[in-house]
Image (spheres, rainbow, N blue to C red):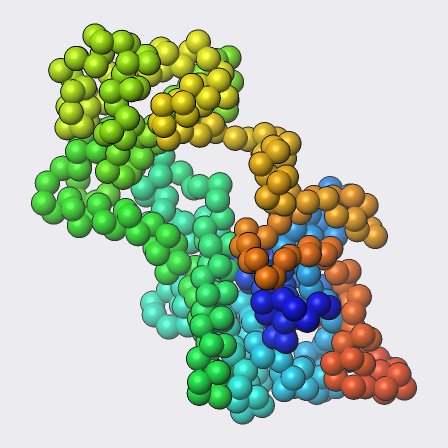
Length: 419
C-alpha cells in the first residue's frame, strides 16, 4: 500500500454494509486509508443481491467496496470477539451501520469501544439517529428521501412525489459521514481523544434539499416568481425541471425526440438578448413579454415553447454547441450509456475497467475527489474473507499456528444453527 496518499497511515475498521457506509469507506480507501472490511462469515448481504453472474459477487457489492481488504470474524464467538477487540485497539476509525442495539448486545457500544481505544473515532450511520421518536424505525434510500423532504419537492407540480435517481439517502449520507470522520481525526490531533460521529439519513437528505428550505421560508412573504406554476400552499411545491434558482432554467426537447433527447438550458439575465436574437431575431429581442426577467418569469411557459420550437430542428449536442457560442449555460441530459462512452468522463477517470477473479472485466466509478499530491489507484473489491490471514498476521501479529488454532476454535466460521 502506497505511503504517500492523503490518508496514508489511517486504518479503518469498516463494519458497514449495503450502500451508505461502504460509500464512505470506499472514498477514504481511494484517498489512501487502509480499509479493513470486517464481515460476518455470511458476508455483506449485497454480495448476493441483484447478481448478474451466478456465484460471483454482485455489481452492487463490487462497485461499493473497492480499495478494501476483507476479514471475516464471528462476533458471537469468544475468540472472534478477542480478534475484534485487538483490531479496535490498532485502528483509527470504527464504522458501523447496524440496527439499534446490535453492537450493544455484542458488548461493543461506544462506551466500551472508547475504553478499548480512547483515540478511536467511532462513526455510525442510522436511518433517523440514535434518539428521537423515529430512532427505532428502519430506513432505506427511498424512505429517507420521503422523510427528508426530497420526494415532496420532486416531480411535476400536478403529479405524484418522485424519488431522485441520485442516491442522496445512502451515498449522500456516506459522504457526510466521511466529512465527520475526517473532522474528528483532525480534532484528535489537538486533543489526543477520539469521539463518536453519527449521521442520520433523514438529516442528510434534509441538508441536501437546503434550497427547498430557503423557499419554504420565502413562501411566508409571498409567491415564488421563479416557479413555473404559481399555485402555492404553505409548503415548498414540486417544481418539475424549473431551475430552482434566481435564473430561469428548464429541459428542452430536441430532435429526434427520444427519452433523453433534452438539453437543459439556463436563461441568465445577461444572455437573454443574444439568445433571443439567435432564435427569433429583433422581433423576439423587442417582445415586451420577455424584455426583463420579471416579464420572462411571468411568461416563461411561452418562452420555453419558443425555445422548444427552435430545439426541434437540432440534436441536443448541436444545440449545446450553438448555445455555448453565445455563453448560454446548458447541458445535454446524458444517459448512462452516454456517460459510459463519453470522452470527458474517460479523461476524468470516472468510469474505469477493472478485473475480478470471479466476474472478469467490469466497470467501477472513479473517485470524484481529485488531489494533486494523492493520485487515486482504484483496486477491485475483495472476495469474502480474502485477506483474513494477511490481516491477522500483518496487523495483529499472529503466527501461523495461532491462526490455525483460531480457525479451529470457530473465530471465523458461521455459528452453528440452533436446533
